[in-house]
Image 1: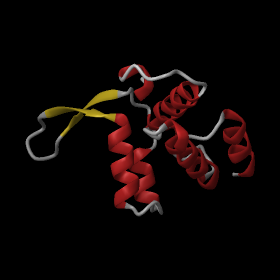
Image 2: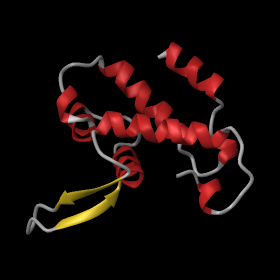
Image 3: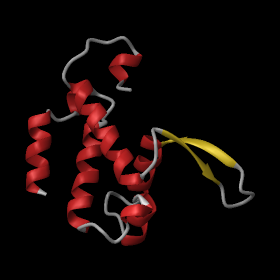
Length: 118
């Protein structure tokens, strides 16, 4: 849910951009907005927020994901069935769409242009 809905702020078309970005992240990762992930140490399940998890992975990689890091994010069902540069561009566009600050998000017209340039 876009922060504007949560904090009862004025609603603009940027909430749709946020929703689009979240749906794309869900498709790329194969995860819902919150999901359970097992920890390696004792297999305890913890609930994580998808957006925070993806941002953390991208931040750790300094926005230049290695193949291994990218595969950690990617939905296993599409592994090997994608063009890496296009998928990487899609990930970057999705992350721009889910910026907390609505003014930092692109418009849908800008999203279409970014996807066409990728």
